[in-house]
Image (cartoon, rainbow, N blue to C red; front, side, top):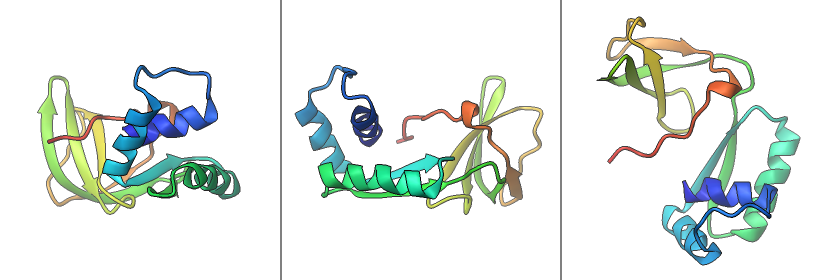
Length: 129
């Protein structure tokens, strides 16, 4: 999460996130990795990642371009949260992908699924402990 704050602060330096820059840098060092999920053109993503790396060389930064093409992966876990279910999907990106879906979706452990996620539906969720 702190890595995301640092990326946003590179793009919008006037924003304040309530945490000191030193705390953000300490958090980035602790996490050690940033994956930017984007629909931007690869050239633009590369420029952004290069800028990030120039400011924070101690973080392994990369990007994953989802574009508008569907992703596919295997359901690793399903948990119900009110009127939704949270799916953890492997193989759809560089790591695990967490997706919230309506309970009307039939999701089974081990099933291969396809995902088409519009950019305005993407939300950053806190990591589960």
